[in-house]
Amino acid sequence: MMREVIRLNIMVVAGYRKVHFLVKKFISEGHKLTIIHRDEEECKKLAKIHKASIVHGDGTDPAILEDAGVMDNDVLLAISSNDAENFVACQIAGRVYGVDRTLAFVNEPEYIDVFKRLGVSTVISTADIIYNMIDQKISVEEIINLMPMEDGKIGIMDIEIADDFKSAGKSLAEISLPEDSVIAFIIRGERQMVPRGSTVVKEGDRLIILSLSSVQTAVIEAIKGRVD
Image (cartoon, rainbow, N blue to C red; front, side, top):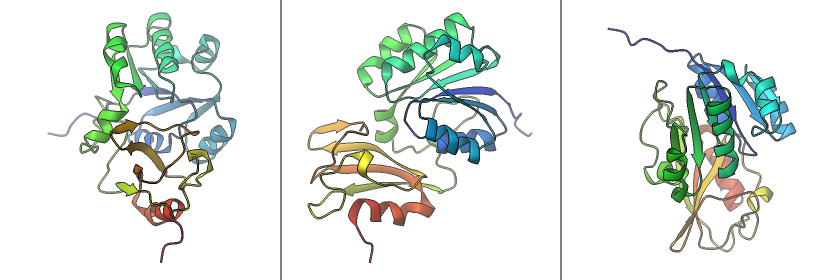
């Protein structure tokens, strides 16, 4: 018996985090996407690449959400790098506009229970995603795992930084990674962190990087230097 394909209207509220992995997967599954993004340049890139409705603005602003048609969506995903913004977007979508399901990306694991108690339908911990090495494919009905591992096309790299790497001493914003890649996690001694654009890469850091397999060589070159 064939599994029934469920098509959903999904609104994605992003901050400065790139969302190409997520958008590609959901569009390929036939879902209708509306993306709200703070970064105007990223909005332009998304509009050129993806068949989705792209809105430049603040996803915590009720006026922006309403103009973007939030009330017509089945799901709202809040995946900015700011936990508070993700929570506010979910609260407005669920409590004010009646969106049935809200999902929040949480960078600080201690907020998970708080978000759940305050009504966010599903809370997704970036730390849990990395620790589990993303070993399950997306279930569209669940829409929980935001990082697809589709038939080996997306890989995970664990790179330890040496002092002669070109990325050593640079902030993430200064490292020119390929489009389809992201530094998802940094392990620094006993400390684990979800990096920001201002986070400086240091000697001895272990970078956990997600990327399409096709750009892994370019990722290594961006982090290490020239690849022989």
